[in-house]
Length: 268
Image 1 (cartoon, rainbow, N blue to C red):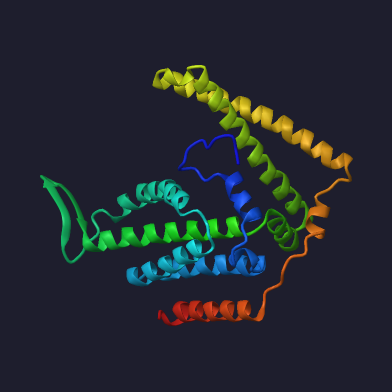
Image 2: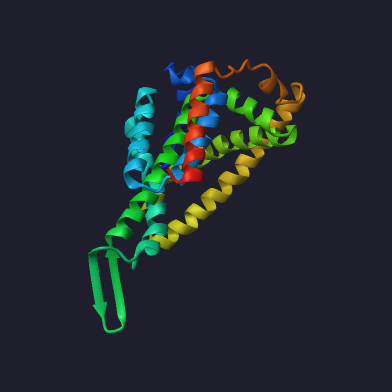
């Protein structure tokens, strides 16, 4: 794990990778191809479904899968903070003054009118559930798929140049998180958090800039070390024996595709 989380509301990629590498639940043993396809099909299904009850049921199924894979439930609750905040920030202005059968909130002064109807609330909940369910699906994939398997998938789907960029970028994220978290700890130990708001902005701006410079230097050293040792990320991709989807996986995928086609064509 990293030295310390920047915030409990920010997903810790190091912690997620550790779970993916060390956990042995049933979902960790499923083919990464199956999990990747099901993740995208699940997100597509969430986009197509507009009925609130159906969305809630699908979200409940996703959460049950998350729990059954022995993934951290307490962390999931904390990680929901940012997607919830972003969704509400965008969705609330869009759902205000939406006509409906009855008003939950109504305010009028002279020519100015502001109200929130039942249809607006339903639309807001639909958007929120879609966001949380999609985030949960991505967490499930990341925390049940080993890094070598993810790298192999990227290498198989995309050209080699993109795969190399993914490998180095993914590693650079870890370096940056480690740098920033370490420097925030040092700043707190030296009393830097007792400053004013604007001094905070200046200090944290300098801190992030310094962390980026050090992260780039460490990333350059890492790339040079890889070149000296034979160059490449190629061994990471080729040596991994990735499981192929079983017959049951293909049946489930086919069933979900059938449901998606029916919803798209016939609005079932």
